Image (tube, rainbow, N blue to C red; front, side):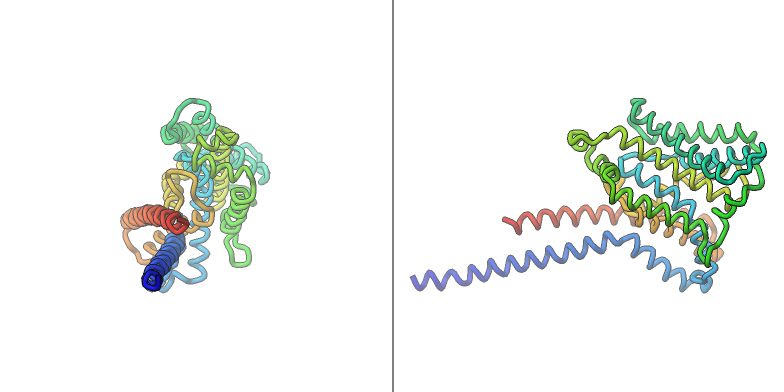
Length: 352
């Protein structure tokens, strides 16, 4: 009896040591996951440090003001793009929405309608209408590929902008539009303040409202969400309407910054918006993403371009640098999913 009792002690110690080792590995992977999830913030901090060392002008107040104003348009586009990507879609028409909104407002100016509030309403309403058309075609039109739908609307909307403007640029915007795009309040660019306000609103919407939670539920598992009674079609349509509205908001900032209405406005900016969302850590498979990380992603793009310009580097390097950032963000997403899978498996073994 005594021998058996003595023999059981080493076994208990081994079990205890194994448990401690398992708990230690679990804790280590939890820390690793936290670091990976901080990826966009970490990339931005490292980028800011490197660029400040390479250029003495990068961290100056004036340049930070320029950076905030320059990235405001991409931030606005990316905020709406996030919701579309969360519901497993994409919207490449947002750049052409900028062109259509600024052209329509430019025509209003030419016709003598100079009310700034009317212009703001026009920017937002036109954008929302284009988003509603995209959402309707995807949800009710039976076209299962959002990319194809929005590529088509990109061409249609850009063509409408060219037709309405006659291919001509209108110069001059109302004072309130110029303020939205160019003014500085207490050292902070007004476009950055407006984007911050929209970020807070969308953050509250996605985190504090049932509809916002439904957007993530639909993106995470559309079939399960529908089975639970979530109005999946209306949720998807709402994501596209919000995306179109934020594109109209980006058009407001664009018109204010350029003080002009060009049918070529916003060309290529849809790619910057999608890139910002990807670099910000949102999953292309839907169901995951945060508005703060989207802003960080847009700032990373803006910082790369701003820093390279300050160093007089060829603009061709911008595409390479941003492409590398996308690959790094995708690898971080792969690493995040791997660590999460290991953590779930480890947690299940510890509970046994």
